[in-house]
Length: 195
Image (cartoon, rainbow, N blue to C red; front, side):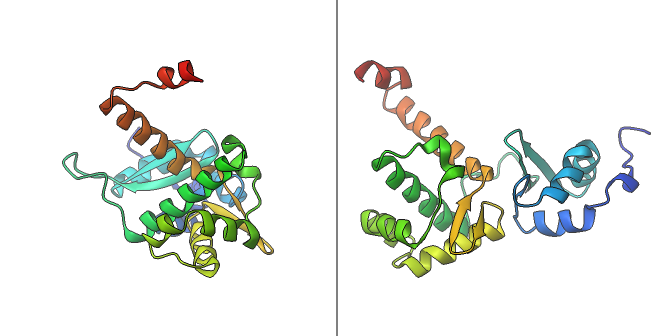
């Protein structure tokens, strides 16, 4: 089969994958194991098909995948929808709070996010959350439901669990910190020397 031809018979999960992913949902081992298995096994075929449709299929070795629309290089990549920005701020405040109480940020997939934790985050991060119009635990729960719809979390009864796809946010935060440090003439090693 030529490199431009797609073997459609292998793509048994195409309809649900495309429907979910074009709406921004991240498909992963933990939130969509059946879809993930077919996507992982047939990655090259899916990538070729999605590329022909104007999308770029991203797959992270931490176990999640997403679709991005192919963009002209001149398009500003920093533009975010209000929903993505709101979710990003809420996730950042959650990470900031967890760091302030000594929780391992690398173990975020083990955190259990319940109303008590949300109330603590809201209290300690009220100003940052107000900037994205989050002023209650109910509004934070709404954001977690959005995160679930987009494949960043799963709900387990009355609590949520973050999924590896949250790494897309944390990777962006780390990249931003590195760029800010470079602008300010600091290096990560400088921080280590002061410790």
